[in-house]
Image (cartoon, rainbow, N blue to C red; front, side):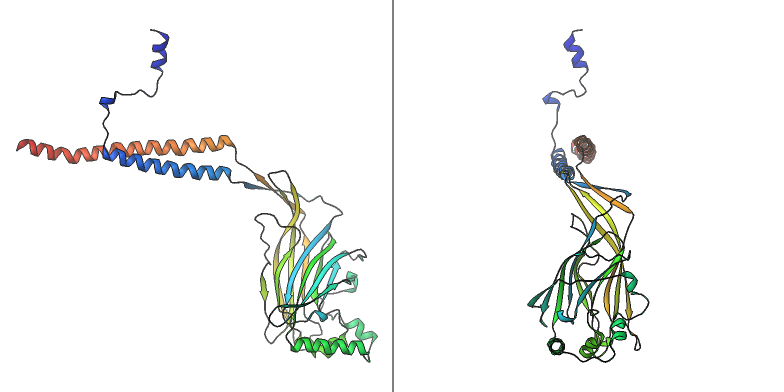
Length: 352
C-alpha cells in the first residue's frame, strides 16, 4: 500500500461519482433556506464580535485630596433671579475660602425665553456649625435677632419694587454652572435664603407664597461616559397653591471609566432618594431645594473590552456547523416524505 493510498484512507469526506448523485427540488429549497439562515447568523456573530462590551469591577476608593465637581442646570419658573441664591456647605465644618465657583443665572420671561444674564460671584459659604438645615430653624433668624426695626434705603426699595414687578410678569430663572467642592459629605441648596428676612417678607408676604417649583435639566458629579444615566435629569416638580422644601438625598459612587484606547475618565455616578416637606401655617422656615450628598467608600471601574477572535471563530463554527447539520437532516426527512407519497401512486399506475 503506497503513501498516497494511506493518505486517501484518512479522507473523512469521500465524494461519490456525479452520476450517483440525485438533485431534487426539496433539496434545493432546503439549501436556499440553509444559506439564508447561515448568512443571517454570520452577520449576527460578526456584529456581536465587533461590539465593544463593558466589564464592571469594584474596589475600595483610595482617592484623597481631590475636589468634587457638581454640574447644575435647573430652572425655577416662578422665582426671579434677584431672589435666588446658591449656598454650599461642607459637612466637615471647615470654611472653604478658595471654593471655585462658576455659576450663572439666566432671567426667563413667562414663556421661558432668556431676557438677561447674571453671574454669581459671591457664592454663599458658611460654617456647617452655623447651619441647622434639618432642625426646623429659619435661616433668617440671625438677621431677625440683630435687626428688629429696619428702614430700607433707596437701593433696597428699588430692588423690592423690581422683584415684585418680575413676579407680576411671571419671570423665572435658570441656574447653571459648576461647583467644585471638597470631596467630603456636604450639601448645597438653592433658595431665597440670601435675602434679609424683612426684605423677603416685603416681597412675598410670607414663606407660603414662595413657589420653589423647579425643573432639573441636568445634575451630575463629573463628566459623562457612554451608558451613564443620571436619575435626576429632566426631573420636573410643580407646586400649585402650596409651598414646601424639597430634599434630594444623594449617594455618590466614585467611578473610573477605561476606554478601549486605554484612556481613563475619572467621574462619579449616583443614586437618589427624594423627600418633600410641605409648609405648615405656623412654620418659620423658608422653602428651598436641597441636595444632600454623601460619598460611597467603594469605587466602580468600568472597562471597555473587545471579545477575543478565537471566541468569535468558535461561536461561528458552532452556529454554521449546526445549521449545516440541521438542514442536512431536514433534507433527508423531506426526501423520504416525498418518496413515501409518490411510491403508492407509482404502484397503482403499474397495476393498471
